[in-house]
Amino acid sequence: MTVNADEGEPGTFKDRYYLEREPHRFLEGALIAAWAVEAQAVYIYLRDEYPAIREILSNEIAKLEAAGLAADTEIHLRRGAGAYICGEESAMIESIEGKRGLPRHRPPYVAEVGLFGRPTLVQNVETLYWVPGIIAKGAQWFASQGRNGGKGLRSYSVSGRVRQPGVKLAPAGITVRELIDEFCGGMQDGHTFKAYLPGGASGGILPASMGNLPLEFGSLEKYGCFVGSHAVVILSDKDNAKDAALNLMRFFEDESCGQCTPCRVGTEKAVKLMQQPKWDEGLLEQLSQAMSDASICGLGQAAANPLRSVLKHFHEDL
Image 1 (cartoon, rainbow, N blue to C red):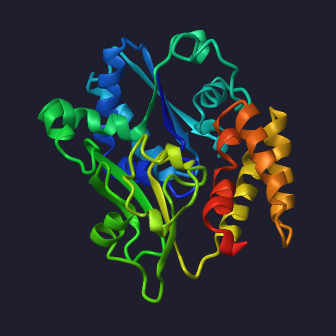
Image 2 (cartoon, rainbow, N blue to C red):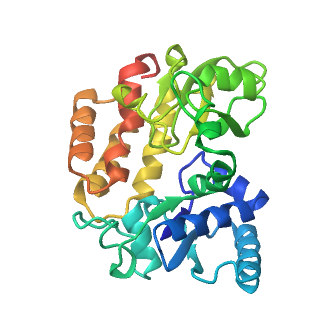
């Protein structure tokens, strides 16, 4: 079993929040998951920019082993080298094996041929964090919380132009307006809500007029966006959507692993086109389509989401 604790998505910091504060709860969830699938070893792939968490987990894993609580499961801590691409499950597995973090072609899927050629369960920190609580209090306790059709609780990493940014534990399906008003103390003084990134860098950008949509899995895909890791970035009337999209595309250009041409060349060409005073909208749309259709993994497939969002919703900023 592998655990993605790399947290490379810009705007996401919930894993760090929980690992620093409640490492035991996470480790208990990991051991339960490993027991459920009869995994003999757990590999935690930790972002190397989190040295404090590495020390915390190293100490707590040693105590678990000394107490005999991990007798049937080996727990290994692996350092990530700061590559965004290693958030993709097969690239993370390649990196744990000591190779370059490049996404694998599928099939075979990692559930059948994963880490060291073994069937592998890939999990994330927040899911494992909730496992002990759900077992203790029951599935009904967790599922009974939520709004607008969402079930359960979600940890939203909120940043940007709000008075109180941070990790917000809120009902699943909450809208961004409810999140700003109820959990973040409203917008910063002098700032008017203009737009938001519902799912970090790759989740697209939506206007304030669409601020009543549930921030939940499956609810934003029809608008060309997604919630992903629930990293919500709030933009105001002082921000330019065109500049934001260019900044994000530069990030993807820098983080592309270079394995496939649509992503490697597409992100570079998109940055050059987006730096022009006037955008060639037809060419950018064509380029976006090629990247989303032909890239090997989610990085290239989603890189054009912010660009397409600006073309669709923020024409005035062009």
